Image (cartoon, rainbow, N blue to C red; front, side, top):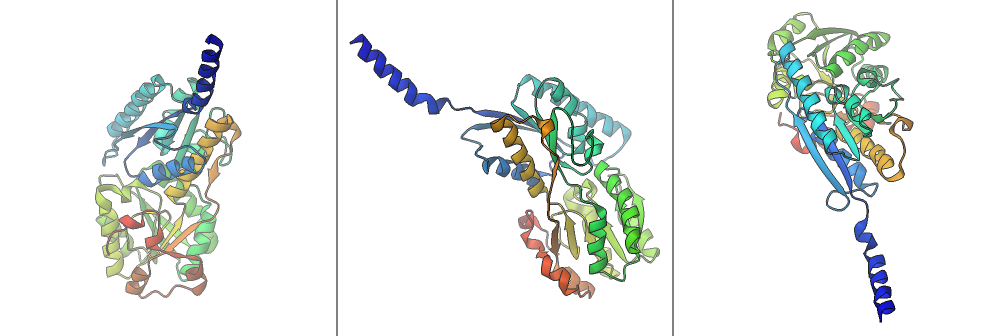
Length: 342
């Protein structure tokens, strides 16, 4: 009788083993709440690799608000908040940490790595800015997916779309991604006969005076870099730029995926797709035990190109057929449901 009971208990224990399957714990550190698409993409990347919230994943998200101001004091406060939040996250002893944005990664990753927690980043435009060894290789303890796109390819498309463009204005803030992009753009655009004139603004500044200044210089186009400046306050500065662009018949080209209408072209990486890449990297670490440093930094293979035909029509611009054949309508962007009315 005792042997039979022991056998039954053994069978029941064996049958119960699936219930004891590994449940993964991920902590997320994010600066600004403007990168929802990247987070959604990250979850989808995990799901496609068999890890899903509500089944075998517990995930906690910490969002640090970024002030519209870009004063030294504001930057110091964000830095301190990142450090404090990172310390709290370490105490949770997660299996992995996702950092979203350059500041979140740059100022927290070393604390996690020192604690032996694998780090995956996303929405970082320049990998070297967060301590990566190169665009392709991160370093011990971390990896991630980057928004980086070689500006040469971007301006090759720009020149094909607007062959008469000789001068482009690029107004940007002190956002790390924006500064790096603007500097590279000035170099790469010159190879296609385009001079890029840049103007740096504080995040709290109204863009209108700078737009008027650039228009007075007889520019041929406006270029918008990856920059949180254009997404703040319900895309206020983007709307102002669009208003002047339509009034003076100056086309806008956006080198990222932004949820507003008005540019004729949107060229670059999509936050959602880059987030998915980070999710696939996290799955390799969690399920296969791959060391983060052995996983190359990933980036979107194919450029995303979207066109706003209504904007082109209002500006009287007829885009070349070869551009229209590879571009998708703006409504098909991952943020398409949030695209603002013209």
